[in-house]
Amino acid sequence: MLSAINLHKTYRKHAVQVPVLRGLDLHVDPGEFLSIVGQSGSGKSTLLHLLGTLDRPDQGEIHLDLARIDNLPAGARDRLRNATFGYIFQFYHLLPELSTLENVLIPQMIGHSILGWMVKARGLRRRAEELLERVGLKHRIKHKPRELSGGEMQRAAIARALVNHPRILLADEPTGNLDEDTGREIVGLLHSLNRSEGLTIIMVTHNRDLAMETDRIVRLTAGRVEDPPELAPTPSISPACT
Image 1 (cartoon, one colour):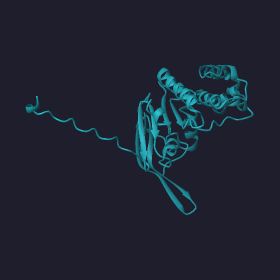
Image 2 (image 1 turned 90 degrees about the horizontal axis):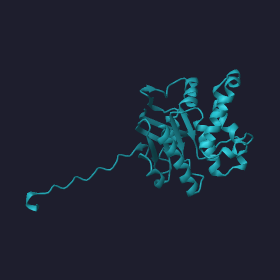
Image 3 (image 1 turned 30 degrees about the vertical axis):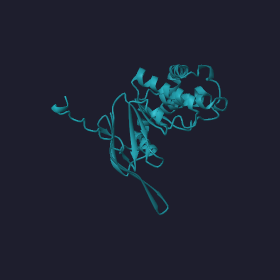
Image 4 (image 1 turned 180 degrees about the vertical axis):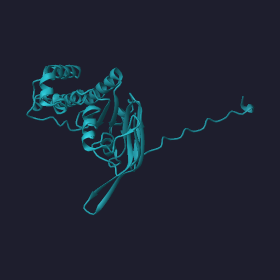
């Protein structure tokens, strides 16, 4: 479904070059819940930004359904991000002057003209309300972000990420600002969405316990996917021992 092929990415600060990804390959299957782990600086967040076309690789390619997407024009990448990818970050990025419901509706507002919004507003609002009910925030739709707890703000961010029916959810340290119990609730919600809707989820996390609960773990080391450990060969049993 989603593939990264020989990705390279280097950041530059003045005269200093910092290579982050060094020939990374990754393949993600439809409906998979994948965790990306690794030490700080190993390229986890950079990889997520490249997969979601928030940034472009210096070298290599990214394919969605066998079609290359990293080299699309800016407008096409904007539309792809709004329709195909949903994003959750460690910081919730809720607009403080808007209510919970209005924050969830932002991707819909961006994706419609003024006339289109006026025609479809009722149905779009219903979709946002249903999502807020699903993430346990039905009673908070009129509250501003300052009136919500960290866990509630992250739930609102999840609803916002899902409002456009994305196929792929990219989650960058979604529990990083939460206590352990609340973090498990958030990951439990992601598991529920993955199972019930077949949503493909790629999650960056430092929490190995949470990563162990996902379908597959990919570890990054020095800007590449670390090869899985080889299984020790099964010792043969000689006839003399039987």
